[in-house]
Length: 265
Image (cartoon, rainbow, N blue to C red):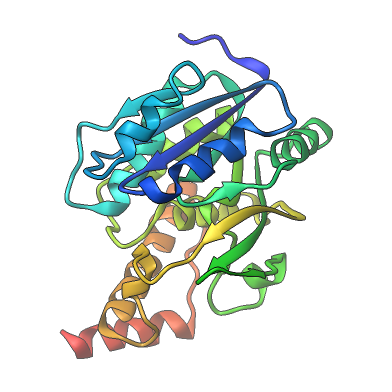
């Protein structure tokens, strides 16, 4: 069993063919003011220049190769983060996609939050969205979960989580189901339904890159793929509700989504 260091921040970076952004992502962590950190990069069988770039950081990072890649991108992503988690020793776990990067004070800000809020298990900071070299600060709040018909939350590179809670999360979400439902959605919904709230640090600490080639780009609003994914998301809600033994939510949105899926088959 690995000895856990309560002052250590474990940053897990998952990479697949992001050679053009990989160095910026790693350097953003290396340059953090917070001293006690470890960087674990999990490569998901990249076939670009990624491995050569990772070799430049020998002695500064740990590199893991995910050899059990499947045809399901969402499961590969979750499994890669899990492999990194198994090799980590920090009490606080940070998730970072290799095309995203941290602001200079992110780790210090997050570690201070958990130090003050000892009962908190998970934290979302705010993203600065990079889209075609333009940056936009986007706000997320509790009201999106409570009032909107569909939950909105910061992407996974904005998620930090306590070690013991991460163990619980992975036991539930690391399954080969809900193929179009990615890691951030799975974590956010499980956490919200469990705690009935989401901790949001109202500081812009993560640069999130949004591109036309991202996983979500094929789910344009009201297209066939969009309706199928939305139906799967409702199924995930039901799955988590059953896991937590709470009442499943019943909404007009769910009824319409299921009807649309019947119509497009």
